[in-house]
Image (cartoon, rainbow, N blue to C red; front, side):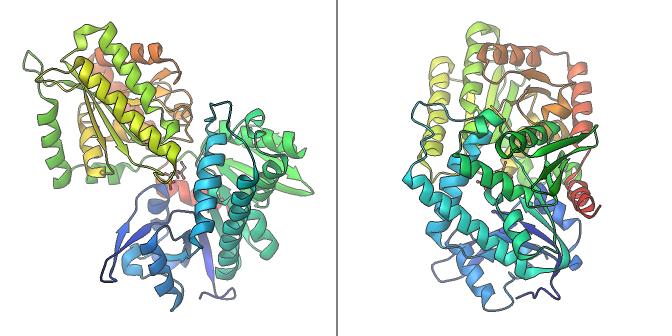
Length: 493
Ligand code: F6P
């Protein structure tokens, strides 16, 4: 194990790490590298910088890998991790399930995305209290591991709503460390945040305020966090113009920061030209086909995890409205909807996935003809196929109810071959950077979304290409490596 005297200078903590493992029947472990901003961000500082990534073991394969690593120095084999030093925590499965499924994805995710919709939810009862205790234990396991692995004065970057208590717990264990927390989600406004039981709401805020910095993807989410601190804790909030916010609570000040993660242009351009993407593009072209004049059908593309905040069902209803109100589009457009199954251990996410398939099927039954399938839906994790769809996109539909950022809105304009029009929810963090050249919609307004789809499809090609170029420029302004290094620098400032 890395000792605290000689330990890591930089540590990242997140629920999901950069690698996952599958356990074969014969006991062999096969690793799979993940993607995303954090992975490319951390690789920017290089493997010899002494950085350690602490994450949770998420399945049987991960657990086995963590156990085998524990027999040595606690770190996973760097051949599997792309050279990064990764320590996976073997948290008891029932503790993990309550913390991740119970609290993180059924409560905190719902609060920050304003997803509670029924008169029966939320209901904070004894089950909730048991899950909350698991969430505390899971956060404490991270704090212990970080405290043990960090060199004196090291910088620790804690990620997301799974780990809100870690900054405070780590500060108790290691007051010498520089600790930052980054929220990849939106932050709920105080009235909604206060759905949480009072003590839990306070514990979450106090946890994050245990750090020196708390950072967000947009100013809007940072402001909401500051307001929650003022309303729930009575903390003092100071605004230094555009430069930043500071929250002072019980004599300690935490600086708030904003870092809007951008798309990784070099990676996307290179990856989207690989042969496996070309193959999928050829398949997709065939599936989409041509209209009665022999022209390739137009495409409206969306790619999401099957997760309620993404608002896939209302997007499908808007497309149905378009075909109903504007019959001229029948046979001339295809809606490509790719959905990666997400959090399927939870019934509410499974039911949502089923609803997506049901509504897509209804549209195909209502409008489809022998030669035209109006909705091409794939519920599968296939990044190469998504990139093929990006290349084909005439229109990208990104209509979340609420989203920390939404990288799809930033990726499609970078990859689209002919330039795409972007129909974008005003509630996505990305809207703060892309509003000038997107068609901005209220995600609940199905009529307005259908109207924006029509406008996007009828936009003159020159205008579409120009807007798409500007969108791509704005989308890549803060690539993952800089996003990560900026946070690190701000923590040291
Ligand atoms: O948006 C918040 C976030 O943690 C992202 O960073 C990540 O892409 C997503 O949620 C992952 O969710 P999960 O790990 O539950 O699949």
